[in-house]
Image 1 (tube, helix red, strand yellow):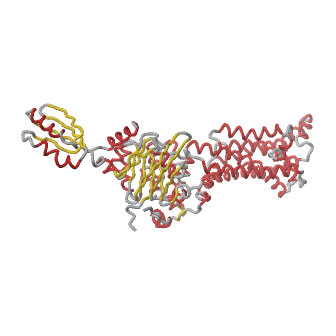
Image 2 (cartoon, rainbow over the protein chains, first blue to last red):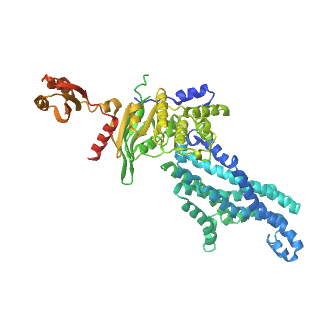
Image 3 (tube, rainbow over the protein chains, first blue to last red):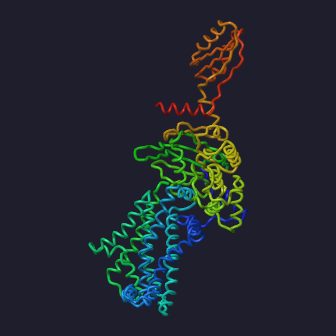
Length: 290
Length: 325
């Protein structure tokens, strides 16, 4: 005969209860989710990674913005021949709008490269090293494994690439112009660029599940990014599908302008494709042999 | 309910095919509660594949497997809640310390105040003797230390079933001794299913053994049965002393004349002659063999005994027989 003891009567739980421990929460998709998420977030916030990420993005985004808001105008006042350059940086826009535009543009370009590099190893490394097999020999759901990787990287990108530079940008623009950027529209615009980052994060996570080495993951992700930018001039319909104008969309949203159909389509498609990538990753990882 | 004979692991016709290669071919296993089940086989026999199927890490191509009555594919998380697993080459996050790894592992099973989790972690560190290395990153651990950590993380939930894949492979003799001792201690509470190719260890601690070769189960029995042979055929070792050659020849003729004697090998050394008699009917040999020899009173029997096998001989014989098919 086969034993079919109820879990609550097992020896470990009796001993654990005696020691004051309770069974972990979560079953099904949520089995081990909280623990895995805490560990993944710990990699971002409880190691020196947070400091490096904070400094890197502060220098890249806000450093460049400071250069254009403070250094270039100061240099132009000393060297008048630099004035056209200083004025041209914001393409004739007032500094409070130009600063916001620059924030969106830098994030969409460098932030995308950043998240691709940061996330390219998340799944591949765990599969190759055997740590995925170790984790999933515990009561942890495969879906949770993928979702915590995605969620922790999204939170990391949100905090270090979007939110903290967003705050510093607000201060920089205020110091440079004496004007406060309207918070809610700026926040919604930041949400648009976060969607662009989320698209690439989910793409890279899916590629990490599908492939066994880093080459194809990086190749396909950068191919979508740079290939899309190249192809869109020859094949405009691609603008309806891929997130190729997210900085422009973010600025229009921030400025309260109505979005043309092509941009609405791009937003919807970016969100929909991100969901498709996640579903493919979940479906495939469920069947992967570890 | 008497659970002494209850089955913790059951597989029926379990198979796994990789493209053209049959990694497992119709494996039927049954592992009783509180047993130490040794899973033997040469490298590539399919031991790790079987273990990974049981843990839900890979999917079988056919057949069925249950642990605690739960299907390994459908209810894998429920099974893993009550199971501890040590991989053949345990891998952890290299930058984490042993204490952090055990804490992380423990939180898959329990929630509660941090100090209580920490107390459980400390208990496990003491179990495997890693207290002094608890706060060092795992990247600096030796093979033996990793294996100890592996046992600790496998035991952190006091599992009802402990699955160990080559638990003593990378340990020195003392480490092996410690691991076997831990396994024997745990037997009272836990069923242990472990794969190994160290046959001495199996013979020492296991009560049941299965031998896998090229994906096929070629033997499965309590270890005492396996070492006793098939119950019909047997080999007897006999040492005789005689000054008269004729007495020896007479005895040999009497013995080889029996229908149940298959073979007699002899080796002479001085006045002593050693015989190895293969018989097809152990019962008849037990009754008659010694009497037949002693019919000639000038013969002196210095040693008479049924040959006892060790696991290595059984293992090699079975594997070679299977390979020659």
